[in-house]
Structure formats: structure tokens, C-alpha cells
Image 1: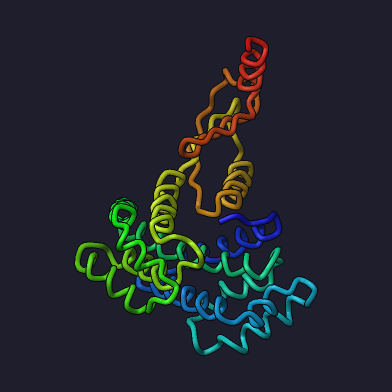
Image 2: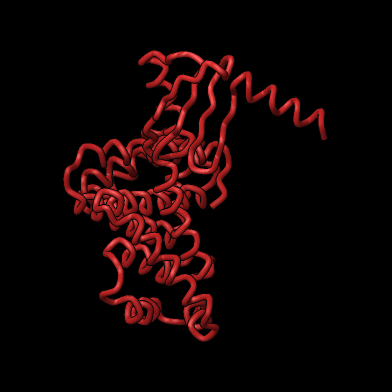
Length: 275
């Protein structure tokens, strides 16, 4: 999924709201409901061009877009889902298509958070990856799933027969949605993308931070908020004081390194001079 700058900011704000609501609930069933309802909203928006256009219209007042949203969805979705959708439509999106992409991303995030809470994130990633390999390895299955004239319910039932009793509820919901509404993406590619999202969520939960000096509580809070916005997921900081850095910070999240330390800049300069 590729988003322009305004849409990235809008999605980050909506995900922060979603994660706040997730933190406030003790029931993973509530997260399942949130994800499923957001997927239902996604299907509605994908099929109604005028509605998604009105909700993403940056030239209109945010209050007006919220009023329209509430008029359509109040009483039809849970309060948590409605709050997330309010965060979506009151932000500025680069296009209606990207707003719909954002709703899809939020639904997936809600379900992956559920898998994380249930201790099933690793198995969800593995199940999605394995199913993706099965689909990619069968030309006949890929053709059936890619047939635009094929019945969506029939496709879901076909894939369901392959995974029945073999995957977690989160995996099944994610797969059913992808097969029912792939939105122009090959199912094998979509499954690979979902597996990557699960892997990224697992790997990027902790930021390993090295600082030349001890950080204050305010600095830790500010850095946590900044990283959470950038990566659109909760980030826990593990901070280590390393005077050899000379100054600044070195941050490692998964396999990604953000090196703003003096030592890091000097090392980069030496590498450039030697090349």
C-alpha cells in the first residue's frame, strides 16, 4: 500500500486512536468485532463511490464529514468502530481511494493486535505465509481466485475448505476478506503482504535506543510518541546509556537502524571517504 504524505498522517492519527481503544479493552473479542466491522465498512465504501468521495472530500468541513458518517453508521457498528471511523473521516486524505486503503489497514491492524494479545502473532504469520505458498504454487487455484466473474462466496468457501480447522480465527478473517475483496491484488501477493504485516508488527514492537546521556522522562515520552506515529504501532523503548556515542541517539527497530549519534555520523563519514 502506497500513501501520499497527507494520507500517511491521517492513517497514523487513526491508528493511534484505534490503539488507544485497544489498550482500553480487556477483551480480544472486542478487537475481533472492531476488525470485522471495519472490513464491512471497507466493502461498503469500495462499492459506493459517492459515499467514499464525500467522506474523503478535503474541501468540505470535517464536522460535515463526521455528521455524514454518523448518519450512515450510528447504530450499525460498535461505538469503538464509530470512534475509529470518526478519526478517519475528520482527517485529510489525499484521495478517496487512499481513505479506503486506510480503512483496510486499520481493520488488519485491529485483528493483528488481537492475535498479539492472544499470543498467536507468530502462528498467524506462519499460517498466512504457508497459505500464500500453496496458492502461488497452484496455477489452477490462482486462476479460480483471480476470475472476476467468479462468485465471491464460492471463492471464500473454496479457500475455507483448505484451511478449515487449521488456522486461527484471525487468520481466517484476514484470508476471507482478501479472497472476497482482493481490490486488484493477486491473492498470493495479498497473503504475502499480510504475512509481512504480522512479521513487522512482531519485530518492531521494541525500539532499542542508545543515548550518549541519560534521557529524561519527558524525552522518553516524546520519543515514544514520535516513533509510534512513524511506525503506526505501539513502540516500547529499551534505553541504554552509551557515552561512546559522543552525543545524539542510535535507534534500532527490527532490522532498521536510525543513527543520529556523533559516533555514527563520523563512522559514515569515514566509510564515504574510504570508498
